[in-house]
Amino acid sequence: MLVLDSRDVPAEARAERVTSLMAEASAASVSLTPHNDLQARMELWQLGRLTLFRSASSGMAMSRDARRARSDGAPIIALAVQERSTARHEQFGHRREVAAGELMLVDLASPFAFSWTTTGASRALQVPLDALGLPPEVVRAAAPRLQDGPLAGLVARHVIDLFRVADQVAAGAQAASVGAASIDLVRALIASSTSADADTRTVHRETLLVRIHEYVRQHLRDPDLDADEIAAVHNISRRQVFELFARTGTSLEQSIIARRLEGAHDELGRPGSRKAIATVAAEWGFRDPAHFSRRFKAAFGLTPSERRAAAAPRP
Image (tube, rainbow, N blue to C red; front, side, top):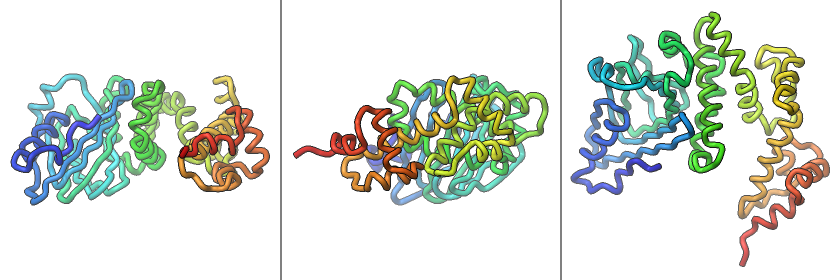
């Protein structure tokens, strides 16, 4: 949902309108850097209990003091990936500069300060604290170490990819399921950035399959993706990998092939796609085009060529 596009607001009322809407959306005090061409855009999507929030604007600063923090309702955690510009973030006595592509964790129910001086943008997953199932002190301890955690890169890519398809996901039947899986990844990220006590070990165990599925999604195009690689990355044995998938009624190989076929199916269905079918097969991890065509028809009831023809624009 589009919350604000400053181009729709008359120039003389733009600063006031942008400030008030950003303050309402963030429940914080907001100020804008004077700019000859003030621009701002805010978008919001709901995936079950997970909220996706993207903001882009010319220079701005937002903050929340202790009085306003105490007056808020249920606590919410925002896990953000800076999209453009370098942001400055301060909370719980820690200050840092957040470059494009880096992660940042903000407790929206506690005092904080956040700003960028040039045109910037940020994408955030907003998660109710009770949905995380983690004590507030664990979240606060993880915040300054988040970017250095072992799952930082994987989760940052997940956030970026999720926003690319936010309209499609939010309108689909699986929106709440995607939101729940994303919350599990946030839990795992926070737990991996703190000490290995009993609570964090439990989180690691409970979110292991979710993290493996996300790793597989991000490496689907690698034809060498296998149980050995997945086991090594997640510090478990090959046997444990196979057992995890067996409990869900499927296998690792079936899961990988099904998701690769879905990716190739979507790519061949794009109007104007001109890649050779063998090229599409190779890019989605299938070394043998004939094997790819057989699996494709078994999965979708039509050949790759028929899928492409069906998606071609008609005169």
